[in-house]
Length: 183
Image (tube, helix red, strand yellow):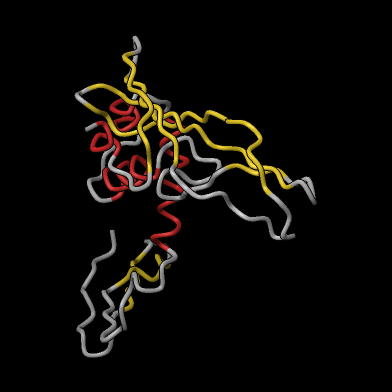
């Protein structure tokens, strides 16, 4: 039942705790033992708990604590932790779904960054960093703008000229010049 609270595949919910300021959900990923690029034997090397800001649950701010398994290669002695971009991306304090939710509210709904930050129970900069990171991916996506079929130009103030600062306008061909009187 607790797995429905998290809503992520291949995740085991270890516990849910009620803290004074937020709800704390502890998870671990279910996965196979990874291999090393050098082909050496890999063994467990400890656990690292990483805390992320998650979407509110039951009307309370929530923290998702991911117990990342640390791995170590016996041949090349390289160490690394579990990584799953569906849970959270590297160097982001929000879970992926909380970052997308915040970006949707700030970008599409036009809310201030402080509003989702207040609902998530975190700082303004935490939400702003996530919105910028996801927003840049959305803006740079090649399918964001389709093929250009028409280009429209409106009349534009070109310059204010002369002693009386007469407005000189530029307009597309076929459009009559607007009549402006000097001020």
